[in-house]
Length: 372
Image 1 (spheres, rainbow, N blue to C red):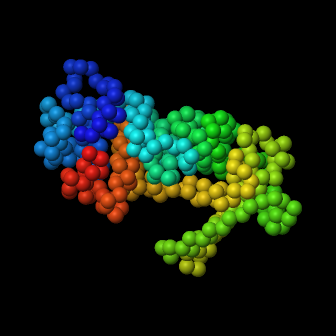
Image 2: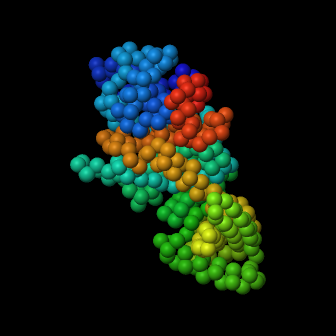
Image 3: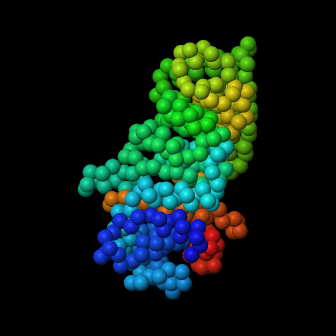
């Protein structure tokens, strides 16, 4: 097995007592990763995969007592320390994709719906992820109980990242002064969506920008950028206006590093149906950066297609019933690892689903995905 996997994951503490260690922790982790890459979604699937591939697995794993049972996989993942697993995950990501310095970091959350455990009264796991757009990879992840807890998780997640010259985008839930301060303190820029949850801030920005747009920004220094995309029967036009002439706003709302505000219009046409939406943002970017601002807003949503959609459609994450202990969070981290490996493998010009099939059929291709 390549050092890139052994070195980063062999340091994860084994939660089991010595007398119960029939199977090596490294063997368990590698089997789960290989199985998930190849399409396994449950512990039983993972055991079936391992038994079918046992001869191949023995070429690089010891397997002193054969293939672990599905109960063993479940117990180990329920007991694994999530912080240690995340740190190992991050070290591997940094080696694979480099740092997040100077890149677009989209912070967004996702709930694993079937992780709700009514029997124990445990809420569904809600994962907050840092998605780096340029690398199409998760650089950090934390679990919280419920979307409302994202606010407390985001500063901790930002501490795990290299924010130097990076642009951090967050939806309205994360539009908080403490979060903006954290980004600025760590050398980054922020673009934060502003909605009614920010009360007078949203209303002040909305009234000012709506009036300025209607008057074509007469007497107001500004910048604008327009982009049109066509495909799949849909025509979408987005226009972004920015201004740094906001001393009046800084006097009313003391936001760390605030340099500009923006409005983004989205017009979508599918056949005869046309929908329009206007959204508002605050940013530490200069006022005359409409193109950069517009692209940051647009690329923020790559986390939906590149991460959340892929995890649900290709990996069946929303249907996962792993619930005991830390199992749901740890197995989710393996899915993100598998997704990153599959996205980074560039020789096969097919989608994620097809790559998973290829990995299951062709052991040489699976080794290529694993970077061995």
